[in-house]
Image (spheres, rainbow, N blue to C red):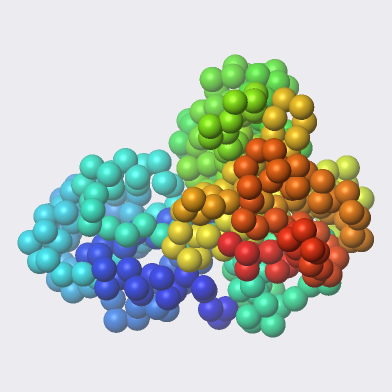
Amino acid sequence: MIPRTLQSELLAQLHEYPVVTLLGPRQAGKTTLVRMALPEYDYVSLEDPENRLIAVEDPKAFLNQYKGNTIFDEVQRAPQLLSYLQGIVDEEQRNGRFVLTGSHQLELRAAISQSLAGRTGILHLLPFSIAELASANIHFDDFEDYVFQGFLPRIHDQRQRPRTAYANYYQTYVERDVRQLIQLKDATLFEKFIKLLAGRVGQIMNHQSLANDVGVDGKTIKEWLSILEASFIIFKLPPYFENFGKRVIKSPKYYFIEPGLLAYLLDIEKPEQVSRDPLMGSIFENLVVVEALKARYNRGMAANLYFYRDSHGNEIDLLHKAGGGMIGMEIKAAATWHPDFKKMLNRFSENTRTLQGKYIAYRGTALSFDDGIQAVPFNKCGKIY
């Protein structure tokens, strides 16, 4: 079993809070992590219909069965438990009492803010990072293989065929869960939407353009995007425009949390097709952005990731705000260094805001320059965050 970086932060927060809530996409390894890290805890799955029925109909009697430390898995299935958990932790006043996991943050966050505010730490577990795979001696020669194989634990633990695994993942979790949430009867309409979204990965979102192509209104597109984001299928990268007088873009970009699912939705059937795809640059950018996100989440930190683009086309692919400082990263799918890669970072740092760190993520080797810019291989860029 491949160790998870987040385990140390999970254990630390159990000493600080009566409840720790672990959020993340389906099949990211949440259950495996909490059960391996906490073998002495009772474990209850609320995916089990019998458990869920009792929890929903008589939460108090249900919780009375669990006097010791307990894990409640997929707790969004019975959110009414949370107000009763509040009473227990307030009465007992001891840390590490409950661990909750969930794969839909909209439902859970609303319930947590109402019932468990100040009583729970919140962590996010995404599928494996490149660094986690490397710790298990799993390496690939280039980014095409990382994208095609993806990062779902089951693919690597059980050596599943990626194309088949992501087809099943899409049908079993993405389509089923999301269709239930939006109560959509026409599966083909949703499939058209998500495939068109994959084709726009890393682009400035134009809701009306996407709505026109799908055949629904802009409000529906915004609703579907929010549900995909809440279900950890996509990640919204917001634009950075703090205190800038010049006109800047204020629409977000979207990336897929799981690059393997993106490859599936783009009908990529072999690793070598990744580098021949017209969206190769965007696919590479998706990989790097999500690696940065995983690095932040695995340390128990908020994302604090942004991009920048102004009306003149000046752009920084990834900005990370930490305290009063900021680091910038340009993402280039090239394998060979070119001096032009520096241009936007230096222009932004000189004219807009001084950058404490300036990085280029690309497919080549590590390089350092006198102007402070560092070129970083894509498989090492998570260390920056």
